[in-house]
Image (tube, rainbow, N blue to C red; front, side, top):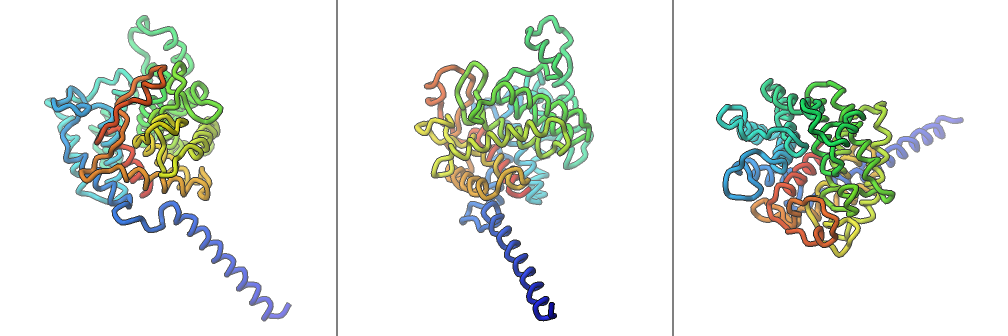
Length: 383
């Protein structure tokens, strides 16, 4: 082979490599590298929603009177604001979010820390654990860790437990287990945060074992989840809790963990079904498989977060899911008003075996069930 031919072959390989790199870059651009329309970037939107949160007093589900404890929608929003501030490098915002927490560590305001007797109250622990991760404040570690440990502690008076609770404890599950899909954020986020704060893999084992039990119990053949075993409806925010819970757990679960493959299987089945049910505007609806149901923002935000996270971590095919994630974000933020409040948020929803109960739920504005997922998405874009 003469030198000229060899040089041409080498140049061909280099050019091909550049072409592949450009193709990869163009693919990635569909996720988070392409220019965002004016005012729609995760940095801008995240800042607006986080500033709205940090300037607000402690919440009481939209009521004007002061709360008796910090409820989980506020906890979820606080966690999202903290991660957004950290990932965007906004030290001033981080400082103000932590200052907002400081009173809860004092005797005067400690009564607002919920007594962690169920999953909705226990999830409070993710905020002090996140603050510890960012600041190494031992007071926050002690508080968050105690709540996470309590979630797996056997009740002192076991005679008061339901028979099924005894069975769940025997399987290594939390006494707070109830097989509602909401639990798969409330339990998973707390245990995963406890692992991130301490490095103790027992917390990950708790979370993974619980997630597999819920997958086996609630996921249907179409990949979606019933709200509860006796409520056969695919409620948007309910499935959103599952999507976010699996995403958060998979971000921390080692590749060789014995439950990882099962959780990844459930995650991908859900994502594949969501891909089919997204509407032309990028939204998912109050009941996922009912196109006539109204577009709902909290579920849309949760599904978008799960897709962003999956594409960025290589769990999902970028070609198929990248455009869906971007469309979900752009569709979602159209519902954000000038005050930084998101519209079309389903009000707090108990389980009920009644189609119209879900279709006719009130649509709230500024409800933190909807504010939180916007911040989670903004964080996921930046992560």
